[in-house]
Image (tube, rainbow, N blue to C red; front, side, top):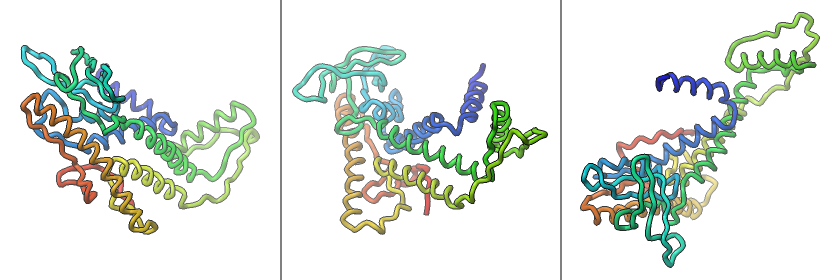
Length: 298
């Protein structure tokens, strides 16, 4: 079975359950992680270290170890996903050594000598906790939104008196869900009761869409991206200023931790790696040439 066939089989399986929580949760976990991995760029990074691996590992584990290995008789550096730090010091989150494991290499390295630790932030907190928190909210909103859009097409609720009749009713609902007009084959119409629903609010779907964008905006703000459409009329100036400063502190801390780690890396290797934030967080504008897709609402 080739890769394309496997993809379409997985796609069909997900589509069948697209109104359930888990597929929506997985979608938003991957989407929010994708947004986050666009925050930083790494200039002059060695070819042996993919830039996206640094942030992906740091977001998932709280830090990314860059370790020195021997490859083809030469010394090179790689990012290791599976790792653990050990070797007690006087401080709770500072260690002397790191164990690492990749599909091709494993071993023990001394931190700041043959290994450089790139923290996600000052406390080495994984971003995945935040991603999971917001992904769960977005998944629930998505399920509600899909259900609302489907229910807007329904004018009645069918009540069945036995399992066979219920199966026929459910099949009808499934066909209507996919946009296929359908009728129940039941000559006597004695096994079904049609309960006509009250008039539905026309703006419920719009409210859910606004809620979806508000939750997404909350996540983006927490990682330092403020949407231009956010309105602050109800906040006084000091409150708005405090919010902006907190966002700046969050993203500046992440940037500083990365650059400090690569300053150590540069000193050990003679490289000149520079970490660049793709968001001008002081003015909350995206830098020219950086494309981060965000839903905009008025």
